[in-house]
Length: 335
Image 1 (cartoon, helix red, strand yellow):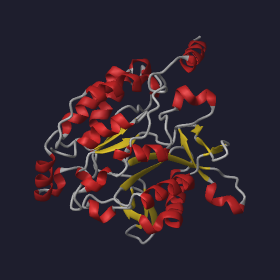
Image 2 (cartoon, helix red, strand yellow):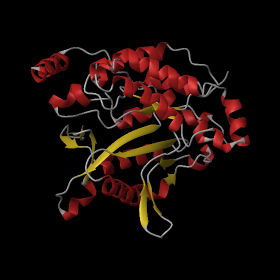
Image 3 (cartoon, helix red, strand yellow):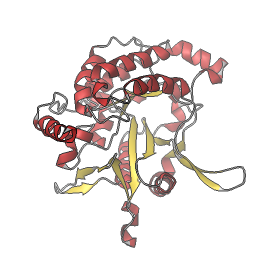
Image 4 (cartoon, one colour):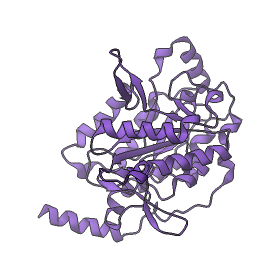
C-alpha cells in the first residue's frame, strides 16, 4: 500500500508546478569575472564561494526529473552565473569501444544518469570528459577565475571511478590542474582547476587515489544531528528542517574574513581543511524531492541578511540561480 502511495505522490509532484523549475534567469555577465576583483594573496579557503550541489543533474530521464533533478541550468551557464564549486558525481560504464574509451566515465545522481543536449539538440549522456572541457573553455575565456572541481564516486567501484577521473583530468586539463591545499592563494590558481581528488603514493610506494577532503568533523556533526533525527522517517526531512540546518552551519564560522585570515595565519589548525556545506541537498532520504526543499530553502537564502566581509565558506545550492550566487559573491566585498 505504501509503495502505491509513493507512486501516486511521485506522479503528482512530477506534474505539479515548481517555483524553482520555472525560474529561468537571463545571464548577468557582471558575475562572470567576479574573482578579478579579489587580491592575488587571498586564501582560496577564505573566499565565500557559491557552488552547485549535484551540478550535473540538470537533465535526466523524464521519470527521474522530480526525484533527482537538482539544477535547471547547464554547467556553462552556472559558471557564467558566478558558480565556482562544481559537485560532480561519476560512475564507469563497463562496455565501451576502444576508440570511445574516454567517454566511459559518465555523470549521475544516485542511480540516475545525467544528460545534455548537443548543438543539434540531440540528447546525449553527460560524460566527465565533456565537463572537463566545458570548464577548461570557460577558464580560457576568463583567466581571472578558478573553479573547484569536487568529484565524487556515486555508484560502482569507488576506487576505479576516482582513478578514471584522475586519468581523464591529467589527459584533458592537466596543464591547468592544481591539487587542493588550504595554503593556496587565488593568485596561484587563476585560470586553473582545483581538484580534490588526485593520484598519490602511500608509505609503501603503492599507487593510490585521494578521494576527497578531510577535516570537516565539526560540520559533519551538525549534518548528522539532522540526518539521525529524521533518518527513520524521511517524510519529516522537510525544507524547514534544512533551513535550520543551514542556520547552524552559518553560525559555525560567522566571523569577519579579516579576523579569519589573521587567525588562520596564527593557527593553521583553527580552520578545517575546507569549510563546505550543501544548502539544499539531503542524504539518505526518499522524500521530499530536491525541488520541494529548494522551494523553501532558496527563498530563505535570498532573504537572509548576509554580512559583507564575514566568512560563510563554500556554499552549495540546489537550483542555483544568479540571484543566489550574487548573494554569496557580494559578501566578499566591503564597500
